[in-house]
Image (cartoon, rainbow, N blue to C red; front, side, top):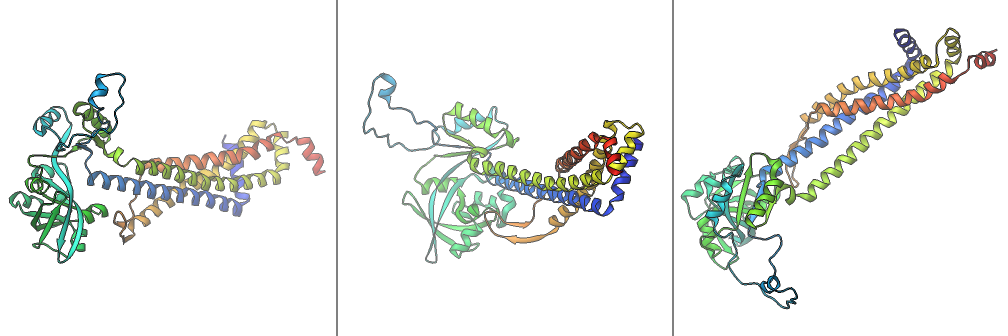
Length: 412
């Protein structure tokens, strides 16, 4: 084996310029593949983390996934119901105290009740429609990270101010209102109440900052004319990945619709999966192109070293030995390129991570989110070595089949 490696190194060094170009191709392929994987997966992790922090892991609402059939349909086999109208009962989670006690006995996390509805804020002749949520401030802070997003005031100030209102900074900009201003709040029930802005928050999610607000639960119940009612139970779990299973169990126990964060954002999760497939396809194509460079250089060496092959076979080298020589040449180029490419990928990742800028889209970014993982290096290097092995094996197999007698006669 040392002799085979020595011969392979001699062949590669004999065509140093072409070998350096092939190594450079593998290096660039591996380096950019690692940097691209770090950037794509980093943006995915950052997006999911922001999403999970911004919304409850499981949300129980006063809806039912499958509405109950008409009473007559459950009593008789052959029933044709026409023009049935549901009862105009007050919607909400029935018996919320019992519901919370039932879930608290086994739920691996924390929960908070709230009442949510649509409202219009008016200030200085401007109207802004928002989703207004009435909460118990202390309980809500256990399932939300909004305390970290406060830009002015404190979320706990709501507990001491029944006429207090906390809104996103986007809502405040639209209204032209600031901390301490009093705005008129018109609820969907027709009730109107004047509330004082006691806090501003900024989550980084445009939809939340530009169209949501919080007040005390009692105030929301008065505005929406639903005394002692709640229509939402927000749950924050110790393990976010268990949200689907927990939501299914809550729904079976209560009969109310329980939505996990994965289900609520199922379309986005599918897009992320497709994006990952595209990313690894592009990475594979880059490394495949680098493999063609290795194939070219090894094929050229086989053509130029045909007389050397004849001499080696005359000295007793087997076909497998010849095959290993030229396969080793391809793998050497791939190995050196993978090592250098790993260093290049790490350097590119550090450079991209140091860039800072501000872009306001659905989520504000101040820097490129990167995710450093050894898996990226392993995948890129493994694919590069695989491409190098295939690129080196094809001409190596041809070299092993050469007949030394035909080579010597051809030379003569």
